[in-house]
Length: 159
Image (tube, rainbow, N blue to C red):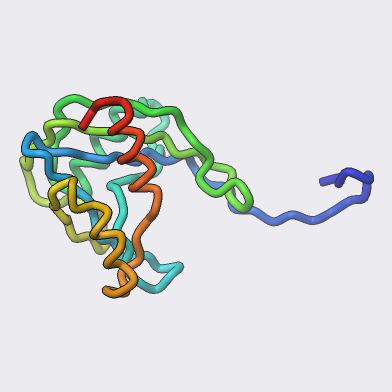
């Protein structure tokens, strides 16, 4: 690319498909998260269920419902879309399409693929910040994006 002074510069980034991310709540006010092994950090991370938009004709809401079921075994009742955001715009060119899933219910076991090492975490939503604070002590990484989606859901009156 050309910088502000017109000089040619090199910038490296990763080109990936867009992603859906789901913040799911049960009827009882429990939050469903996942603990997933992440190869790049060689460790586990607490995250929202999420996945690539890799099926050409699948709309984003259907992808969110599919990923939620595959990674947690939970089916969404109502699902609410939030505006998308750039994943990490300094080094990736994909967007995240976030959703809140309400009244989720367990209907099956996890159906992740062979590359996924996932454990479902179910906690009262009021304990989310405690889970975040304990992450340093437990050594399990916590994706801070969860707290942002949670706050948006609260402000929209969804929880």
